[in-house]
Amino acid sequence: MVAWREQVAREKRAAFKDEVYWGRPVPGFGASDARILILGLAPAAHGGNRTGRIFTGDRSGDVLFAAMHRAGLANQALSVSIDDGLKLVDVRIAASVRCAPPDNKPTPEERDTCASWLVQEVGFLKPTLRVVLTLGAFAWGAWWPTMSSVYSVSPPRPRPTFGHGALWRGDGVPTVIGSFHVSQQNIFTGKLTPAMLDDVFALVKAEAGL
Image 1 (tube, rainbow, N blue to C red):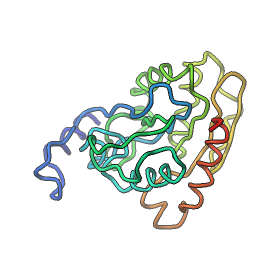
Image 2 (cartoon, rainbow, N blue to C red; image 1 turned 45 degrees about the vertical axis):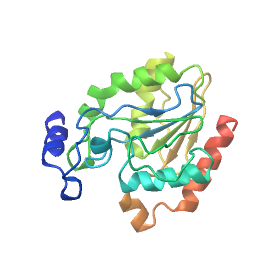
Image 3 (cartoon, one colour; image 1 turned 90 degrees about the vertical axis):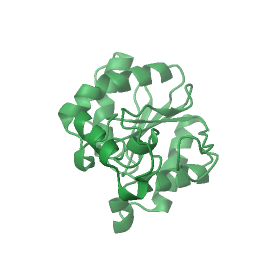
């Protein structure tokens, strides 16, 4: 995966041939005392891997930040570069895997290798974190061992089933809400619509007390 992200940063996409790619692990973005964590899959090869900020400079980010802006959780609807003035309101965004993977499909082994970074980030948020919104089944699956490590609790058994709008509450831990990923495939096929995202963010805000 490291070799892939670096190769992409060298070879570039034609549309961005004059840009200097980030080409490194992409850190989380947003408030360090957020009540909401949005957990995604991994940086896009020509999105976060190019710009250095998660969900920035790709179409999935266009969908996500437009919905967050409608929900009052972002000051603008677009995220095109790391210095574009975007600010989040009581939200932090992170990826389950911090490096761009081939075909945008990280493996469970890559997820586990990157797990310590997510654990560390959630640990920083622990005093204020109330809700985790997972974008896709991969992020849903990545959350439970992270929760176990940070909060010193056993993961729920049986494992809660992922679905759009799925909600799980536990004692002394953040509420977990699932959403279909904001990928272009989900948008183009109608699996995920703006109205569905708006409903999920309304639920997230209610659970966070916003």
